[in-house]
Image 1 (tube, rainbow, N blue to C red):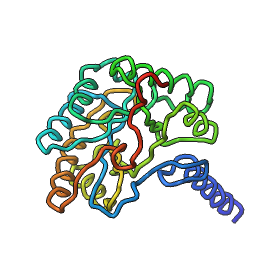
Image 2 (spheres, rainbow, N blue to C red):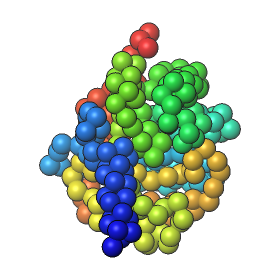
Image 3 (cartoon, helix red, strand yellow):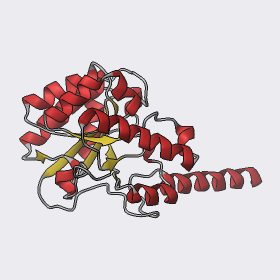
Length: 243
């Protein structure tokens, strides 16, 4: 009985810890937008962990055929590997946000290191794009009070969302990913897909196919698509000359 009770307590503690530090919805430490406040049938598609070829370009190719723009939260190391992909996304009207430079969990555990990692990711994108992103999505959505306070001092807005499929990393079938994503859609939803895998390359072909299913279904249902800055009514980039 003692062992069972101990296990139950541990499960509760772990669940509470996840909710506080990594849940898409927790606002305990401050505003962490996971949806737009609208009654209109509009959704924001977001993509994390890229660019990762050829999958990021395949997503961009498809979105162009549907005249859909999305938000890509990109990892600096991946941008260094595929700068032309990031340039293309920005050129075609997609919004680029920061998703750290290295995407390493141990960096999230020490704020001094995480701060440098965020700044390096910002600098990578700023140098490439000629403008400084104003939106940041923490890797794994992991946040803590110091991070959120410092982000705002730096003029970075933390952005959450809802995972299209919590097991997307294991690449279930496109139909399963799409069904789960569509079940979460409502006016103002922010959907999180992954065109990459942490800061590494990785297969995302099933994500690409799932995105096609989701977009076409929502278009038939009368939805439109917005970038995060459009959905939330906030700047996507800093004004020229401002840090």
